[in-house]
Length: 105
Image (cartoon, rainbow, N blue to C red; front, side, top):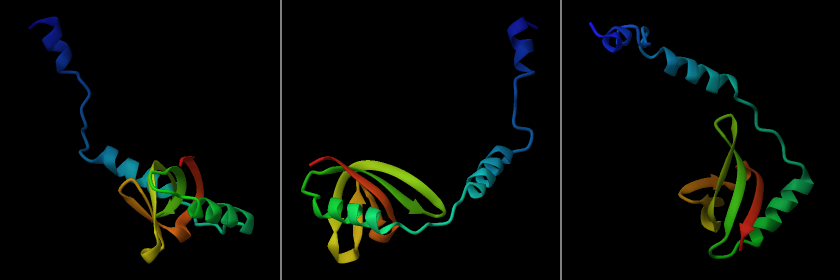
């Protein structure tokens, strides 16, 4: 048996199928946080930024979803009918916004 073929038999493998996925899921759940209240000053900044959105604006947002604070950047559009901000294809309820920065108007 060649040296290369002999080495292949000792290659790492996942003896417990799904263990890595279970570990990642547990870590994800452990990192969950509770949604905090936004201070009035920050709420006013977010409101002003939403008002200043124009067609073709690009925004960087921080929002709360399923126990995590997530970041997203992309073309932003305010959906007044549903009280949502659409960033790329993701729709975020305005109450879940933690921060917004308009990069391009």
